[in-house]
View 1 (cartoon, rainbow, N blue to C red):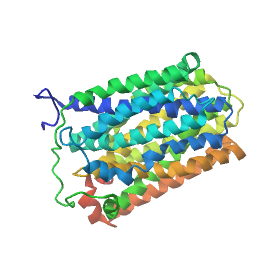
View 2 (view 1 turned 90 degrees about the horizontal axis):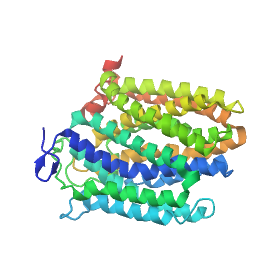
View 3 (view 1 turned 120 degrees about the vertical axis):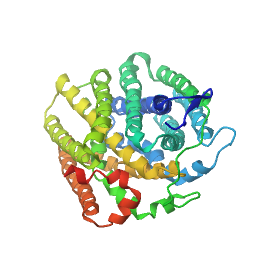
Length: 432
């Protein structure tokens, strides 16, 4: 085992890498779980339109466009702190400070100020994520990446359990201000492992087939193999993400309040998502990446069709809501493990932070652009029509991704795929 991670000069096993990665991703996931898990429900209870709630997806803008400056983050640092630590724990501390500011801007009375603070928080956390993803790619050897991304997605679910489910459950009794202060303290505490950590240089040997030096965004995107990877990442997932965004507002329309939804998320949906994420890491190794994609596309389509059935009713039983939310989160966890693993395979190397940022940004761009449009469709025609359209679009997305995989398998651009993305596509032929 390579000596990649050291605390106090002692060599640690691979589990120590996972603990460090979990602390870094939890530091992002807990406050963002509160923002993206609680706000749609809180605002829908306040009678905000679906179009407005869809506009909350704009808070993902910093994540979608972090590739613009990712190469600068990759190459700018203080040698005394380390390439990654120069960004990670300072951004975490700024995020903790912003949460203190957010405690004074409740959404019910200070929506504009709250939105501005949360946008700043997302910019800070997205910048932090460039360094975190780069360091994760540096630390993990190829055979560890599937499990490393299982830890990443799983940590996000633990964050959603605490930041989304638990905080939503407590919101009505404790209030926005107390919860934001609590989140600030949690972020600061979770930053301490990185602050106390002694960074080591990446042991990854830069692939001789790749260009050496500081690689920018455009240089990365000009690689034809990356242009082939993007539709595989985006087409089967974009509309699934949009459907995920609108499901808790649907439950509000069907008669559930914030406390009930928070309880379902905390007790059923997020734990199911965490368990599904761990299972996905195992399943991905067993069935391969392309078969895994087919499975999650099928599950997403079934869930969308069932959501149409639920939306046509005037109410929903708690057990039905628990099933819908649980399947939704299991699906999302699996997609994250799959997508992050493909991204990491294509990102490993000297400029891993830039490469991962580019791929993860484009991963968000299409659902980011579509969320307000689809929200408007839901306002005009209802959520049943919205999920009918999403079902059709999910089928189209799967066909696009499957076509790209088959073209690469049948020989078109085979030399490109084998030269650069063999780890990402090596199992395509085994799925047939």
